[in-house]
Image 1 (cartoon, one colour):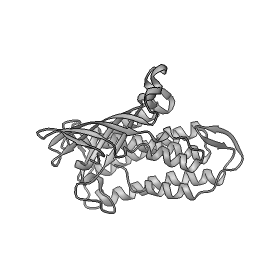
Image 2 (cartoon, one colour; image 1 turned 45 degrees about the vertical axis):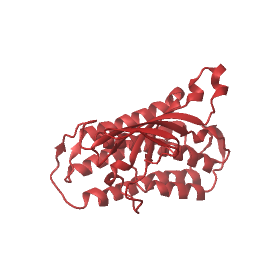
Image 3 (tube, rainbow, N blue to C red; image 1 turned 180 degrees about the horizontal axis):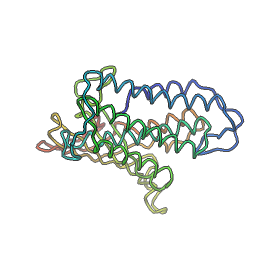
Length: 284
């Protein structure tokens, strides 16, 4: 799951200075020659997010007990959480890859460097979590790691194949017992919803694009209810923040990171064994 460390990214990004000696622009961010202050800041943010996430993982999961290295078999969609944790693993690697890559681009690194640093850092975190689990009561789960690699792989493909950016992976979270700090996302799986969002405007034929707002997307979601005993399926709308053009590099970075989160929007939810619910602004 995503760690609170990513909040550090947002604060640091907005406080950092602008790059010098810009040469070319890559995806809205100027590339810099040599090591600038901004490159160092970007690298530090990625390192800080990794370190913060691992420290958080230690205190959340691994500090209570040590066991010999061992494996567990959980399954995928029919595991103890009806698959919501596997979507969480996939989304975490997907989110981290995109965040790391965009931070490095913002810092002025080349697209190749940003791509491989994003991929490597995301894969390193996923593997580190499973190794930590392996010497704790949880155990090393190949299913968890495979889910991480699926999310990472899709993020990598999206960065290389622009058409795939019309289908994005998003997450919304609203804990059933209210918000607490620091958040413990894995304690409240009922509060998670994972979404695939579709950029209808781009997917329509050119002659029809004008009939559909560029910022409005269609989303399908999956969640669980009643302590992971009932599946939930959702269809709703989603806001594509990147449809709103910005020139400021720090705002653009924040926009791309926040755009991987599904904001409250109209939706309809079907829960196994319960009545259909309609939401003007769906939260969880």
